[in-house]
Length: 85
Length: 153
Image 1 (cartoon, rainbow over the protein chains, first blue to last red):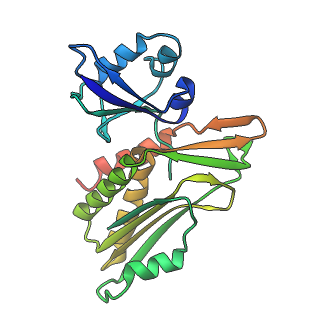
Image 2: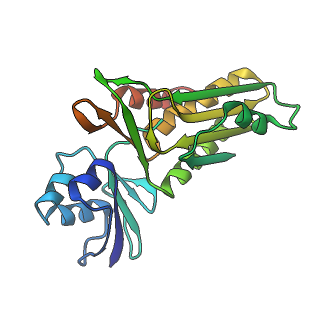
């Protein structure tokens, strides 16, 4: 399935990328599985999304966790804990 | 209910006047105004840049205001949050709540800003003499939000 990735703040800067369309292999159908798939790309991906990073995730613009299911056409975002206000 | 994300400044008096216009049942208006400080974590801040997640930000703010409306007897709430480059002394965020009585207005206003700080997708990047740095999330902000889960259940 294909999903849209979005990256913000420090994650965006580490990757040098704000968005990407990605085709996920069969079986990658949760937020956590998608994160693991991206970490496996290595390099900046492991640095930006690795388990050592305190990250927040949103799926279809709602806060999500590793167990949140994802589906074709969805929008998955990775970013640091928020600091507005 | 109104939420706005904008680069331009806002006028507190004009916003409050619009929010309470033509509703004589309002007995209390509570506002919170967040402003840019010139020092953070020991470093001088010359400027900050606010980034957000267009689309999700508005949904998150609307959801927070909707939660406040179900928890307290309030008439209306307004959230205005600025993005882009901001300098010390500038206004960042406005939360305004109208209610029949002050108690509900105070509580709802504090709830909205506490939730905004941990749930709405904004990020601050500061320019300091040592260079640019992303602001770290504060544990005290998480605690401020968590207290609303214990109280008022």
